[in-house]
Amino acid sequence: MMWQPIMEKVRSRLQSWKGNLLSFGGRITLIKSVLVNLPVYYMSLFSMPKSIADMINKCISSFLWNVKADRGIHWIKWDMVCGPKSHGGLGFFDVKVRNRALLNKWIWRFSEDTESLWKKIIVAKYNYDPLAILPKGISARSSNGLWKEIVCSVISNEEDFLLDVRCVMGNGVRIDFWSDFWTGVRSLKEAFPRIYGLVTNKQGKISEFGSWVNGLWSWNIELRRELFSWEIPSWNRFNQVINSGVSTFPGVDSLKWSGASNGIYNSRDFCIKLASAGKLQDPLWYKVWNKFAPPKVAAFVWKAMYSRLPVASELMKRGVNASVQPLCLFCKEHQEDVSHVLCHCSVVWQVWQRWCYLWRVRIIFPIDVRQLLQVWSSQFIRRKVRNLWHLGFFGLIWQIWLCRNKSRFNGASFTVDQLFNLVLLQVGFWGNVLWPTLVPQVLDFVRCPDAIIFGCG
Ligand SMILES: *[C@@H]1O[C@H](CO)[C@@H](O)[C@H](O)[C@H]1NC(C)=O
Ligand SMILES: *[C@@H]1O[C@H](CO)[C@@H](O)[C@H](O)[C@H]1NC(C)=O
Ligand SMILES: [Zn+2]
Picture 1 (cartoon, protein in one colour):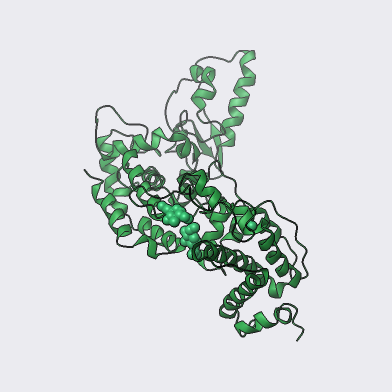
Picture 2 (cartoon, rainbow, N blue to C red):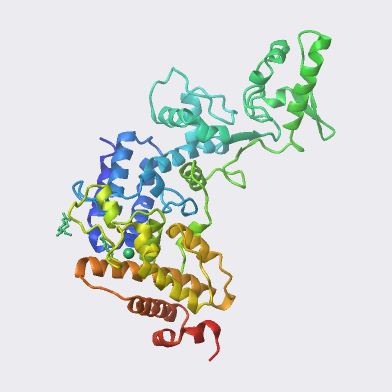
């Protein structure tokens, strides 16, 4: 089986790492490198069968969530995991999407590589018009082959790519007048069937329907008979439409892909477009992937934004461990769910407030982690220490989570004071590494954060 080597490659590269020795952030990095290094040769020549894509995706997802032999939980749906960070994904793509992105490139190259050998072979084998700007289907004569597979795959997902490709008239020698998409309508033949019925020339390139006269394009479309008066409005509209597609000077005909701002197809933008379909772009995700927070902490916040963490309520929902203590171990009153243990808990909320008090900031009681981050990001903070304020969010949420783990697994317990001091220590530590002039020593921040924040001594 042709795809076997690729699957093996993914599996062995992921297995060579003991997933549980890497943090979640580290696993994301490794997955990205495995995906980037998939043999482009296969990926850009063959359409990957769905069954193979499913297997590879499952393998990657299991690695990401540290699921072994089907024991464990894929916490967030694959569809949400894949995709740009701006839309809540992790910044990598489903293999099948990438495969399709690479196959599309051939359609693009078909229009550009006019002189190359592969193009000549394809044109001869499939009986294409050598001038055509796009490969029009596949002739039944050749019933198999690489090219057929590529074109069929692209055509069967027409709405994702081909419908975004528009022909731009230059000198008009490569664009089909009646059937290519070069005016405001997808095909003139279909948009104006009555006029199509009336013309003498039912096929040919744009250049066969007009010419340049003194630098201006002028149409020369022959009709079989005079128009009836009631046909005039339709004829006028037809002329309006074709005039809107006329170029200003006789350059070369080209293609324009609406998926990229420069109009040139590229596989990355295609992946982004496909993977973000149906998802909302939210600038808050950029705050999650804050460049100052360590990657594993950012990845933790990403999961917290989706409320998918192994807290008691989530585990019970998934029937994982019926004997798990359902109560929050900070307050021992409420059931442990994500919003509770990270912000709502009376103990925990005091810690957040303590930090805000330090900054002279009043903060509303949030619905969940997502809203907390939103509120956090919208505070007006002095420019000089703004990054420190944002880092505080990560320091707080991370230390709260670490203490939660220590209470749960090591039987430790924490007061508000202790928790808060750990947070100061954490932020002081990060701050000292990131901005040694602002926080010269970790302990400076712990002893007198006021002095750093307000610069008063
Ligand atoms: C279930 O929870 C109990 C008590 O917290 C623990 O001792 C046990 O190891 C857990 N079992 C599994 C399979 O996680
Ligand atoms: C905290 O505990 C969870 C299990 O509830 C575990 O999956 C996670 O790795 C722990 N996190 C840290 C940072 O120790
Ligand atoms: Zn609590």
